[in-house]
Length: 606
Image 1 (spheres, rainbow, N blue to C red):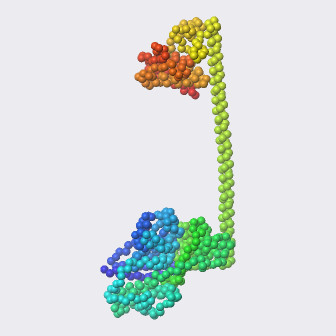
Image 2 (image 1 turned 180 degrees about the vertical axis):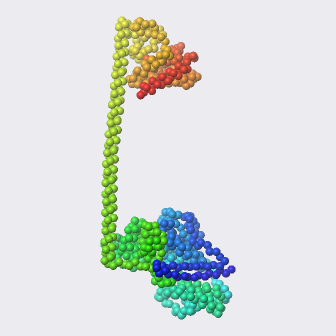
């Protein structure tokens, strides 16, 4: 079935808020209209969107941006209008800054929200519009000529071949059908000036002349559908005219620029940007510079903008400011609107025709003085804060220095205490060793006295070894310690070692404190007895070689060591070079001896 497209314009003005809104209603028969503005959930989906469509209009938005939320319904309406126009090949999408992350600034160079960017297929940027400016979007799309694929010459429904007309002739015919006087073709110099006015005239007359054209259509040999399409063409106007780019700084006041640069110390580029974004006033420029002085692109060159041809909307009103519907505050420009939205969290804004009254010279000077005093107060506050921070850092540094000195002194004191304790232990060990040596000398003296001046001793390869620490005597008893003891004490031969005297043997070994000899002996004895207790069936642990260095230096010289081994079940071998555990050795006695040796070793090492 034939798709009938009806485009109606409704202009409605509210006197209280002086707000202008445009409602475009697109009606289709037998076709359900789907959402024309596609939301892109990821960076990959944006890349696929740009590579799929020949012409793409992408809105870079933010969830926290109040103007973005307020202008989204109008953006959806504009996207639906482009989607319904068969002569325009344009797909619209919206993507949010939290989805793209760092790519917002690094890849797409977005500096403000919302920003509308027009792409060709493959991601080639054609143009961009920063801020809520739908007229700028339409101009950008018209300049890019985003037309659908040309299907070739055709015929109107119900009519024959139609002769191709020039734009001027087509315009004259449309005006004639609407009942307007023919207009002569404009000259080259005045063409751009008259296009906007003609388009406005056609748009105003289009709704009123719809019925008249529909009535005249049958008499002219055209169908009703052709008449409606002619009205739509007359309402559209010429949108594909060339847009001239100009330098926006040419219209700025030199006096205001001199005030910002010479009196207030701003650079030229910052002063120009402040005036452009601050509604052309010094106070607005200072407010914008204070809010954006930390931006990375604050010192970037100013780009050219499309020339404003002076055309206005259908009702003759032009938006001069923005108004917050939540608090009623009137904001002069988009920068102030964004600043207000960020501070208050408000998101309901609308365009307003109310123009803020410019300041007089006296008010301007007073405002400058007020701003200077504000800057001075902020500078003083910052300097005071830095001074307090420096004082706090100095206090912290001094405190940490005192703590470090205190900790160092405490560590040195503890080191001196440990050194003094070690010296004390060494003196006590030396005193005990001196007492032991004196006792040995006294024993030798008495032995000499009892043995007619002779000392029972043995002179070996190691030199002189007194009997005080040489207790293992050969079996023949020549010069043995038992004979000497018998001669001194007049007592019978000493009895064999007994398990009941294990404590006495261990105590004798523990009495050797000099150089830790007693501890080393107890450690060797613990190893001998422990190996037998843990591995009773291992033959290598049941024999002790008395000819090795460990036994000669750490066991043999100390009284009570060999006696302990004999008491727990070790017996001398036939060749006299070792000790071997007897087959009938009592395991309980071995375990009891191991516990006592371990306890004595632990006590010795404390």
